[in-house]
Every structure is written in C-alpha cells, then in structure tokens.
Length: 390
Image 1 (cartoon, rainbow, N blue to C red):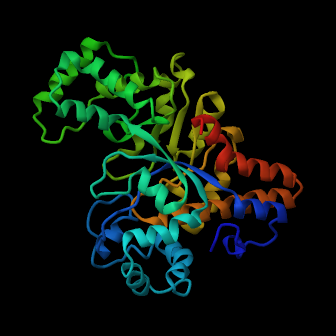
Image 2: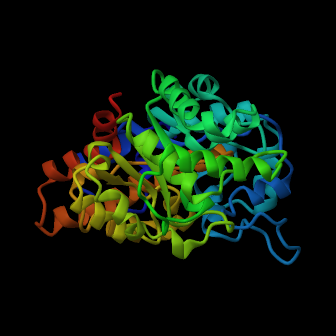
Image 3: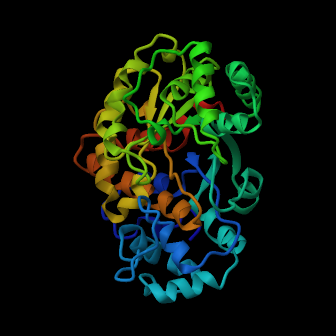
C-alpha cells in the first residue's frame, strides 16, 4: 500500500478528487513521535503496547486485540503481513512474530508517508530506534526533541551540588538546543498543571534539589513542582518550541490535573508568549486546547495518540479538532511508540478522518475544494515546517 494508493480512502464515498489525491499522497511531518522496539517482544508485551493506560499484564479473560487499535491493526496492517484484512488475532500475531523488528519497520514505516519525524527520545523501558535508525528504516528525515525531565534527572545522577544545579541545567539545555528542534516536558505526569507557575529563584531551586537528592533514589525521578516550574521556564527562555503533554496517558497521570486550562497562569506570562507552546495529544481536552490555540498566538495543539486509540471512531475527534482553532495552529502527530503499526495506522486514520470531514464540507458547499486541500497541507506538514524551522 504505497502512499497515494486509493486503498487509503477505501469505503469513504464522495470525497472530491483533488482532496482525495491530497489526502492520499501528502508527505506528512509527524511533529511528535517515538522510535520502534529494536528487540523482539512476546505477545503479552505486544498487547500491552497498545493499551495506553495500564501497565499491568493483559488479564486472562481478554485480549487487547479486542480494542479500537487492535481492530485497526487487523484492518490496515494485516494485508501488509500477507493476511486477509480483519485476519483473526492469532493469525496476525503469528505473521507478525515471524518478522524481525527491523523487517517490520521497513515494511510498515515507509507506508506512513512521513517525510520528517520529530522524535522524543526520552526514557523507555525497552530499547527503541534512535533518530538515525528511524531515518534508515522509514526513508524519512528525523529531528530530535529533548525531554527536560531526563536532562534534570541525569544531572542529579552525576552528583551536581544543589547550589550549582540551576546553572548546570541551563548550560545543559543550551548545549542541547544547538542540535535539537525543541524541548518537551511531562509535568502533566509528574505534578499536574495546577502548580505555582511563578519562575522560582535559584535559591528555591537549590533547596528543592537538596530535598530531592536527600531521597537517595537509585534512578532519580523529578516530581517537585518547584523544579518542574524551573525547567519549563529555563526552556522557555531559549525560545525553541516547548512540547507539553496534555490529557490522556498512562494511569500514573492524574487526568483531571492535565486540563490545559490550568496552564493559563503560565501562558499569560509575557516571556512565555514569545515561545511556541505545543500542546500534545490533548484528548479528551482537545476543545480546551483549541480554545487556547485560538486565544494565544504562540499556542499550538495536536490530537496525536487519541487518533490511534479511538481507531474507527477517530473521525469524530478529528472533526471536533477542526471546530475552533485557526488552522495554522494545529499539527499532525501520531505519538506512535514501540510498534510500527501505530506509526502507520496513525497516518492512515488521520488521512481518512481529514478527508471525511473536509470532503463533507466541500460537498455541502461550505468550503471550496482548494481551501480543503490547503488546510490539509497546513495541518499535515506546513505548520510544523514553519514552527520547527525544518
């Protein structure tokens, strides 16, 4: 199924021809994505990898194949493994497990039609492909996003003195900024958004680092609101795009504390308004995120992650994301992690959802086909190209 094949839009009736061609063939920029597993995994680990919230083994009474992403894999990826579409789960697993991870990547990733992957290379429990391997296996270019918490945790592990931490962190991310296209924070996971967003003093940072170091953690985990506010402000000062996880994620996240409206005290600060703030994922707070993207010139958002996990129902999410925000403020993302199926299916579902929503508006005379194609190109690639300077 090469990009541009009509199969991508199969089952969608009445898509205007130029819009259909654009949706099928557009070379995407995936502005937030991760690598793929480099080692073989067993079926349990495979099924756990498309259950976003739980970190437990899949219960014996169920299979994760009976989920929206499971059905999407069997629909879109099974034919690429030599199977009939909707092949039974056992057949899918047998065909998949006959291939090495690199073979799977080379078979699936190029078909996503992504010309540039902007990769978060932060912490992973299993080895995943780095940007160089991702480029080689997908045929697309790659850039890197640096996760702030990983930098901070690495510094503490080196034994940096609390009084020196603030300056050492600023120096570390300034060095990273020479090559990286931006930064990411997972403050949503670590403390939530309902914290004091006033920039902390270096003395307050030193005191917080001393408390953190006194915990004696073998693998330091940043979860102090003072330090989270500090690393965010330090990154903002450099002016590169700052990605912020919003909404849906693993269960160690308190979902009610990741509503992006809680970021208003941060977003209203003049110094923050000079830096692109990229709200990632956003479901189920995609409407709140769109509101913020409308209200602040420097705020952007995507619905990555949610598209894959909503599967066939993602068309509604995609249409809702087009309701409020200016179209120059939304970007394509898959947030795929580990499984190349997620990289491919994220692309296919997004193309189909955009074609369905925009095609309806063209048929009803609300939009011109030219404008529909233009918006598809903006969200799929051009906005990311502008914001990240690709």
